[in-house]
Amino acid sequence: MTIKATSITKLLWLSTYHHTMASLQRAPRHMRHVATSSLISSFVASGPSPRVSFSQHHYLASQALRLAFMNGASASLSGARLMASLSESHDQVQDAYQQKMVSISDAYDSGNGEFVSAEVVSFEEDCDVRVTVRVKPDPYTHLENKSHYQYFSFRSTLHLASPQIKSLIHRSKKEQKSKIRVQYILENAGQASFANAFRGYSTFVTTKSTPFEPESWKRVGDTRYDEEKGWLIWNHEIMVENDNTRSLSAYFAYFPPYSYERHLGLVARCAADSPECIVDSLGQTLSGRDIECLIIGTGPRTCWIIHRQHPGESMAEFFAEGLLTRLLSLNDKWDSVARRAKELYTFYIVPNVNLDGSISGFLRTNAAGSNLNREWAPSSAPPGTSETDDDESATCKVRYEAPTLSRSSEVYHILRRMDETSCDAFLDVHGDEDLPFNFLAGSQGMPNWNKRLESLHGAFLASYQRANPDMQQEVSYDPDKPNEGMKNICSNQIALRYDCFSATLEMPFKELWQEDGWGPERARQLGASVLDPLGYIWPYLRDDTAFWDELPPDDAYVHPSSQYKLNDPVRSE
Image (cartoon, rainbow, N blue to C red):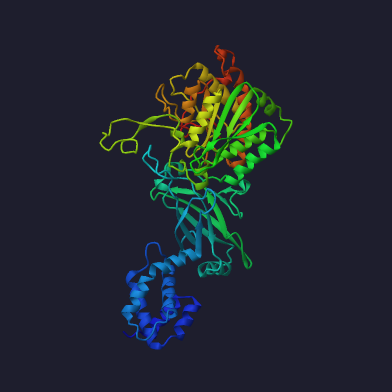
């Protein structure tokens, strides 16, 4: 085939990379014809793929041509053989293009996110670079017959040495722009465990060199959820100043991570700085990590507070940090509320129940794939799980044993110690994906729910709201109907087992309703504030009289609802 000089000129015009032009000029004329014709046949026939932009397609062509000459293509190499060689390396060249321009890493404590694709987009788009990422699922949960995922945390790095990024920086300077716009797409958000919860959510970002500086994380204001495509989308801008481009790396997360190193540091600080604190190991996780329990106080009532059964809910451990810092007077040795709390209670505080899942970047499970908040009592196993026989009918209920050392050792060890100490007050601290509120979920569905427990719940919440306005009473999960609650859920089982005040405390991943600024610091403050309501309800914890008749009207139990959008009872503008 004879290729006119204009064809070669056109190809060279499309390929803007100097090393490709130099290679072509050095090649023999007959080799130029063979290589160019084969290249055109290969790439024109295939065309740009849906994930490859127009400009990226031409770059792939130029790279393939360069590879042909670098590999010593000779005059005897036929056009068909060259075309096959180029076609075979097409995917490798495309991967090299993408990885060279941007890299995604989750190879750090609590990381979760994997690279899918990256492309430079056309001038008409609202961004310069588009990066697509996926969330990795938790291990399969047999009791729920699914693999959970929602939590993400990853580092994105744009590589300054890549031709694409250099070209973008040059273009930005030429057009007198001060930034490069990068759009991120979480492409499997629509299949996440709580996909609808992405509506109204804002991603966190930090450009620090480490993701473990909580104060550095900020919200990405233009985060949006495309329900039709199932994508979570946000933009990040890289500033271009003079000859230096700063912040080529950025971390993104569902909520700022709380590292295992920070966890160990917190435990060590509590033990070293306060003689009132005893650190005990309740047992080990499935991966061999100690489940630390901090025992504080000498009071006659026993209060257990556990955190982060669901590992992706990192705000729970920030809550624990605030609670422990105040309780041990690490920042204020004259705190009278903390001093009184230690006189009233003996505290057993577990800062992180699910250490294995936290380090692995999971949303809800431990290393074995167990959702620990469903492992506090035996329950009915669904058909088809390892707990059932193959010939069981779809309607047959089979006993699912829990907790067990092989599947949920974390719960097993905690519950064993609780049986030794008993319990008068209990909190299980979590994060909630959907509701933009801090709230309490009680044990209304347990058979022992009565006026005493209802009144304790109401008084605790009212006092908490007075101590910290970030807590509220009106919005929560819709309470279970009497005798219809799940007994394998932690706070329900504790309320039933010890006939005590027991609740799940939830904090949001989203911003608080009609208010900005929710993050790690306010989660710490909420943890510190919990000592006030615990002190307030202490006299009534085991009171068998009608104490509720003496409480002020503001302490009355409020029946909550999850329907906050239709009638906002909490904050109105």
